Length: 571
Image (cartoon, rainbow, N blue to C red; front, side, top):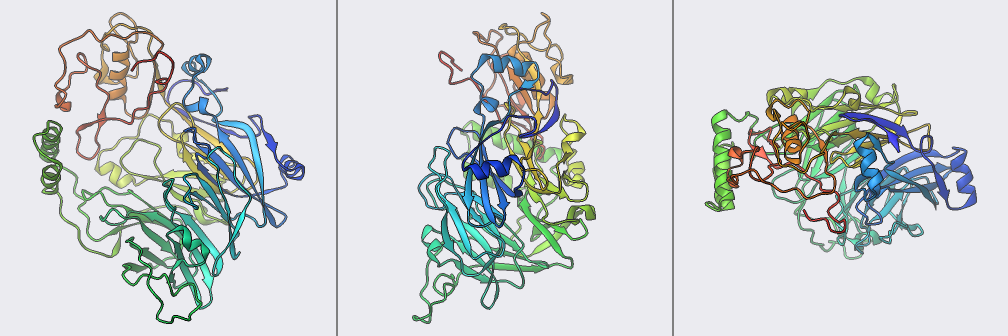
């Protein structure tokens, strides 16, 4: 257990140094890990055993060969069933988010690239690894119970420069993109189905070495697209239904000729700076709810590219009231979804233009690109409507959390109640990989960051503000709208209703600890369930909500109820 304390702040520790670790596998690999003779290369996270908690897989170089280390998550950290763990959390003591055992797997080559997904379409999460400059990928099939199979070599038509998998959907092949140096020059290969792994990926020529890749929905058709970058060009390959086409040369043996779809829509955009990183996400505000492309320059500046001419006007007070009104009408079944969408679209300027333009810039530092591999990826651990960026600082051995402060100010978004140390994570050596994942009973994700000088990563837990209920009575908070972060009723107690009222108005992430008992709601009258804006928190049912930063209307928060599976528990 870690004594993190109560109240919103972050706590960091290093696995293996401040936690117990037991390595499982070949004796030589165990010795190399214990002696820290292996060189960390990369890291991914997914739920490989299906228990609902994320697991870690870390890749290492071992004298030219490779090693993977699998560390399973500790389910007690996010969904405790032990009463002693519940009690400890109320006192600010949290269990480790990972179990001590680390399973070690050998690889023929160093895993410079590591991705997870369902690459054999069997419904279980797998791992795909490869070496930079190599001409093979290695598939380690997952069995759904947390174990990986022996590496299966898959030939690729070129030398690898980058690898990225799309969002995983178990039971369906996970798209995989590779940057390659192939005969004839640099290429981008895309594997859209399991059969493509036999040597027939979709292919596109590139102006230079592919250095970054990201899958996302970058237009409004609901199909996943692919963004790729070279040192000076961004390429967006828009998704569509893949239909194999016959080669004009039936005797051709090139794997590129039989699967390149003629109907693909590709956008290419040159930029006047050297690109060191690419990420996609919702980094700027616009009424169209578009996704942007973030580029990290060699000088450390972040350029946010938007497609076409998005509508960036903040909503007026009258427009916010209109949106709230039509949403309530939809909730009351007075209008259908088509009408709801049409009414809201009246407030949005359509954006049908193509092409990518710099919408905003975020000033950075050359330390972001000062050494080796650059960590540059989307993250959002703050409950805010704008995505953040995790950017590695190789000079100062840290990862910085950066966001678009200009739009945050325009939308009057205030930082949630968390200390400033959550904006920076220090690691041993230059940061080479980072993942955001849920690490505690709190809903918001923490971070796991791998540095170049330690075989185990640094873990950062975001401890939420915790309200501990100590009465089964139904009493409101004394002064909830003041958001003083103190749950207190007229009876000098903290009730479930009072805790929820404080949480609603405090912002950020909060945890409410509810002891066993029967909680009867006695305060009436019932709320108007179809008028969230007029709901009375002091009586009726329990209203759990926050405030939409885009239009100012009350919205349902992300709510995680832990304990609902306990025997006799009725919620």
